[in-house]
Amino acid sequence: MAGAIIENMSTKKLVFLGFFILVFQILSIMIGALIAPSPTSAIHYSATKCINRHRARGWLMPWGSNRCHQVKSFDEPLAKTLDANDIVFAVHVPLPNMEMSPWFQYVLAVLQFDIEFKMINQIEDDVIITIDAGIAYRDNGMSEWTTQFHSVEQRPLRCMLGVPKSVLLQTYENEGSFYQCDPIPFMELGTVAHKYFLINLRLPVNDTMNVGIGEIKDIHMVNGGFTKVWISIKTVFSPWILVATAWYWYRISLMARPPVLLEKVIFALGVSMTFLNVPVEWLSLGFEWTWMLLFEDVQQGVFYATLFCFWVIFCGEHLMDQSQRNRLSAYWWQVGIVVFGSSVLLLFDLSERGVHLINPFYSVWASDIGTKVSFTFIVVAGLSVCLYFLSLCHMVRCVFRNIGGKVQQLPAMPEARRLCYKGIIFRFKFLMLVTLACAAMTIIFFILNQVSEGHWHWGDYTLQVNSAFLTGIYGMWNLYVFTIIFLYAPSHKHNRHRSGDCQPTGVIEEPESQEMQLTCGEQGPTETYRMTGKVAED
Image (tube, rainbow, N blue to C red; front, side, top):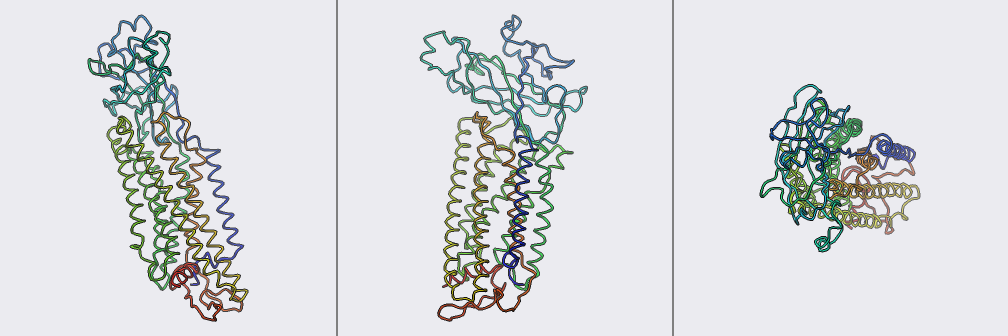
């Protein structure tokens, strides 16, 4: 075989391939922009204040034929006779005349408290609010509610009035105004296997519990999820990359020599992309699998680790000489750092979403320590990937400089051969620039994704990964992996010994009339791969 497809395919076919990739990239962006809704579209609910004088553990409905006895405002005469423990805040998901669908991948909910300022009942500093929460489900409007989860959780209550506290203590002018409170992370349900959900909240009060939380007037809940568009895209890309990866390894197995490290890591990249593409969400439509979010994080983590390792090895193999390359141990510290970082992020993810399997109300953001640790993880992860990208840029610069040593030999060649080698080098450089662009977009997506997962917890609703950006990045990954697999697969074309042809196995004349033999396919997948190894040795 005469090298890889990237150096044997005609320019016309390469241009057509590039146009094909560009069209699919634009299409993946347009799907997110025109078809897919926002990844975490929010629906607002106002909790109904139900009366439960006997404090029974039954489920209280906010509306319908069996709705609870309720008050609309705590300023009503009836509410004045009630104890705080007699109130249950009820929320029915979804809204009336609607029903939930398994097409929603998850339900994420946060709480927003309306707390009125009272001089005799102010919010204390560093106060903790205790929430007795439960969630039940049913699949038709006539059946009984089935308890799904119940837990008593504590959350920090962070509120401010916008006026210095020293002034408030001296005047009643701000009496009746409302605090501005940060949203409180409440629940993350990893599956939506039922049509209707009922949430009951209690704020139990005694001498030590829920003291100093101010005068709560209302509770609002915000929930969001994702739709079927994501599953559909994965279903389209999954067989495509699977077939391409199998075809690539079949072509590698036909070669007389064993595969080199670069070819092995390209295959690993295809396998990781296939693993990410597997649309297991189809199975979740018929089963109540609460671990789907955790599994998707594992899928993405495996792909991130493989992709980052591939970029390091892809550049490194074009920097090392023939005696040092083709050994994974040569990249032990780069690969080790990537694997270590991925493992730390996995442990961080398990600390929250792993617990969600048995308690969806748990949150690492529930305490000040958990919030600081989580924020530190996100910041460190963001800085780490930025440093990784800078080091990758440096490696690409070194590769270009390494190739520059080979370009200096081109003037001594015959014109036809010189033009052919210039074309091979140009193709490789263009692919390296595409790699850098893909790496830059991946780093940006990684950082925005980490921040957007925490924007509910930080109280900032403006930062959100747009659907077009999400589907565009996912399409970019698949198209990039397909391009690498296709272009670095062994070509079916055999050597031609016509005058003027570019023969990678031929002789390259140096100014001193010395000859340097480059054996076709015996030392690596492409001519650029073999040339850079020779330059490094020299």
